[in-house]
Length: 549
Ligand code: N01
Image (cartoon, rainbow, N blue to C red; front, side, top):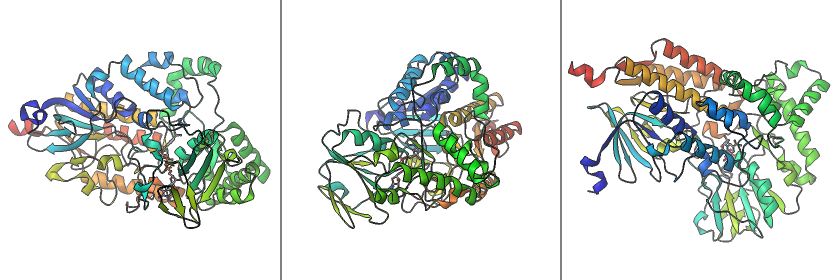
């Protein structure tokens, strides 16, 4: 037996936290500083940051405005941190996260370069037993996952993948050294958020760039700029708590007003004016600031979609490329909403070509490049911007087992089942931050993450003060939540696109809408109601201590 795995080396802590991104770090701070608990964080990377540690591709940037993309547990930090860009870039977000880790002395409870391989709930002791690829064995009362929803990279199993002799990268596992595109013939496969951010940047450096697009996208100019210091100093910082509170109770975690106007009640001129204003201002406000029926009525949606198609026709010069770029097969906003910097403009560059693989699919990757049904292409580099096995993929990289040795993978074989996206029946004392069934991926992530962190912290505090050893989602409450999540999704346009929200990007994955679409504020209200009603829907018991008395 490996020395590290000898029984004598088992470490006991109150909580094991998996992941050292925003989710894991904020959770660690709360458990340690607010509840005085012991916690061990395991992190696969050699540094903190999670998503922002791994996604270092060119152009990587958050599309939440920087002043609202932050952790808020320290009012001093909120006041002192100064972002440089309206939308923060990956290096700046990573330095912000590193600053948090240093400032709050979080690293001492984090073990880096360590992947959790198994986590088993031991019914005799009511504790989780966690093992890692470094031979650690730790037992904990609580297991808390902060593993991200969009973390398990997906490189499609294209024939000949391993034969390519050039360099290849996935946007979500970008190397730490600089990748130099100078003089290179580069392919990018995929036009989701990562593709549309990296394509304009790579195009500027590469000798040639060929984009392989399966689904044309709607995207709105971000209108990125340097941060407006006056706005920050005069409007944001003195009013931070109020702004945050507004974001916390909003639909999507932003302190903004949603338009109450209906596109179908407006005249064609009024609609044009509203869409032009949204386009000129840029960002996600195009959607929420124009008309509220865009998200629920296909005819209203068509008016906005047509406006964007007209913009594409206006911006892109080559008519053949325009036709390939026009999104017509899904409503606006039914896939992840996108904002960009010079995306469509990039197709006017002489060194950029667009290949429509919906009509001429990739047949194989060859040692020299990519072969589609119609053509052979030669490349020095292939960038896979092909997304993630979202929401469940990172759970399935570990062997998580609850009561009766049931594996999470088996439990979720037909799609994820959770209560509030926070717990799974049969997996006691395991809490998920931004799990499936929660609204996180449809909201500003840091606001969503902190709602979970606060709620879990309050729940654990409640358990400690009421001498409760075990909390477990009730199976009926879980079924009711899953039905509710599905039911409200069915009435939305999200069901009309093949998206990762539905698992449609992963062959064989059950087609189930995974996030809660009812809005972050409504969800917060529901979670608070559950807590106020003595954690309704959870079975609480004193566990072994109760049996012993
Ligand atoms: O991944 P995606 P992403 N053959 O799944 C294509 C967050 N994020 O990394 O649309 C050919 O969106 C696929 O085609 P299709 C954000 O939540 C945020 O870009 O499935 N093509 C699509 O074009 C985002 O939604 C930020 O037909 C294949 C692309 O690859 C999420 O992460 C920045 C293929 C994948 O797009 C994921 O974004 C970056 C195949 N077999 C990411 N399989 C910001 O905050 C897939 N594709 C700004």
